[in-house]
Length: 304
Length: 244
Image (cartoon, rainbow over all chains, first blue to last red; front, side):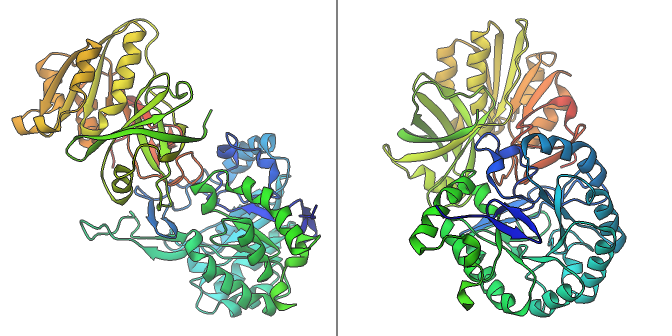
């Protein structure tokens, strides 16, 4: 029986599967299907300092490889998340979660971190500088290394928990971005948020999504993200959490082989709510097949 | 409780232009209340298709859908014996009153199916039911035989004949009755304006997951942001805002 434990910035989690922010709510919606305590951790819905209603409908479109969304960071605001949601979350989930925080100014991120960092359920902060669905925030910080570093430094200054930065594939020079973040004190990287995409209605020729564009996710982006991880892994020392199109245990193995220390899973769980427990069931068999006893030994296997 | 079922297709037939009736085989009655829905995995498509429930029998789940795009077109070509992975039941259904009353079911087009299951349940519970259905033209009429067989009071309105269901309701003097509605947004909006203060509307939305996780179908209500798939699809009239 293989050992699935992995360590992220000194904190051990029992397996490398982390449901991704925005695809898992606060864990409650999966309780009808499986015990969410099976996962190593998960990342909560992107949280901003003020409550956000998100974008109008339609927020969802589809493509052959997955889906596009423009939800737009709908959330009740950091105070409500800390005071109302995290106490409820603790009743159903006993591990520590990633607090995904986003904003429209450096101060927004800083305040959000101040509110969520002390919470006992928060194990890591996940700095979302990569949401493609809000204007003047999110991804605007993730495409400019100076802005990204400024946000990171402000958040690091008020945090006690490890800070992971969730990057956007829209960054013009992702390697440079990741190196700049590492130098500025990032504890880890989450590669990647969604790709910016578009679908037009067949009959009208107009955008399907209310926000015109949306974030592309699902199995169709897996090889794209895999390539980015393979590209970044040799250039940084901090852990990388892979995120993009993972749907099977073999995808997890492949992404870890490219350099991921752990793997986030999003769209697969929306397409099939049972996909995460299925992957967890399959992983030990894969390790046995590969003759590997510790899954963490797979990280960066491509370079060994 | 919501779960995944593998349900074989028993039969499928076109019942009106672009409209199909699909019967799925179940082991015992499918555990859904009127107004809840199921999310069907369509071969070759990533996201499931949310479909309302027309009726439930001892061993069948009966669905009615309109071919609206590629997914439903694929569905309409599926044959008896093929298996549909069905997620459900999903969402909150309609809430019938405790004491027996005279209830109005108002449906438009492909919004009519969930009201068949609801009307049957309301009759079983001893309510008096009047059904008002609106369609584009007589050729688009759905469920006439079912309504006849139920022995329920029913009336149809046709756009082609210059009357919609809301006008029909007013002509029949039924605007004081508590209503249960499903249909196009303009119909629901007009109904909420013209009808009783006591009403419930079932909404439609493009969905991602169908079970609440992605927040892809949230709408603004007087109770804050609510997910059509989870807190809905049925909402009481007083919480609905009509901004979209």
